[in-house]
Image 1 (cartoon, rainbow, N blue to C red):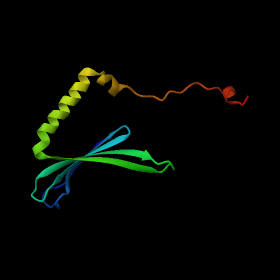
Image 2 (cartoon, rainbow, N blue to C red):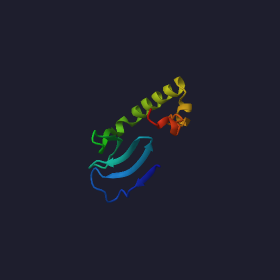
Image 3 (spheres, helix red, strand yellow):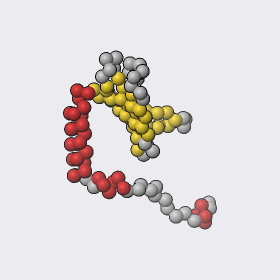
Length: 116
């Protein structure tokens, strides 16, 4: 499920989020947050969050963050578009997206579970 949130830009604090988009993609969640500098310039933070489990079974979240400033938007978008295009042209990308990965189970009969 994706969510989008906009905030009124008139009464915001420096570095406050003015727009947020959450994209859940399998085991990862991506956060696209537009923030404002003290001068009112916008920048983008992209955060990848993955749920991991410690050896004792406790869950923790591993996060990686990128700060993207407006002077880099065009070059970043060009690089991303070119890289995704390469993957689409050189691999069966569409098949991968639509492929439902189901866990492989073997048929086990109750008789097979008895000890020998």
